[in-house]
Length: 126
Picture (cartoon, rainbow, N blue to C red):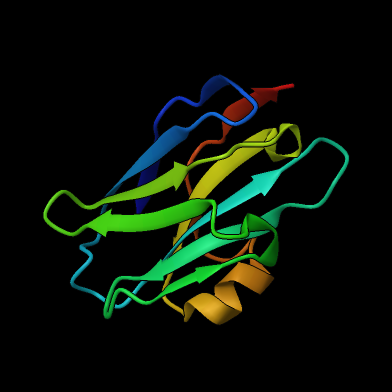
């Protein structure tokens, strides 16, 4: 299993950014938790959002507050994270990940479980 995240970027507070993550080595027809995590230097990696490849059910961390939307394109084996109303505290390295467990568990367990893409830096300026 391999995951390749798109480049992040610099965005002003209140702006939007979409991350994508292309997966290979498995298909979304299989039952996977497809997730985004993030990590600020000096802090633990935390779950952001997850989508179940089998039924499309989505999960979000409380701090997302309706600002982010996770989606997947099964034909393209790609996961997306649309981030709106970005705040400076959203600045972090974002990781996409996949695991053959449920989203509820994977968002809380995180690394080292599952397969992970390289991190991509998102910087939100105030």
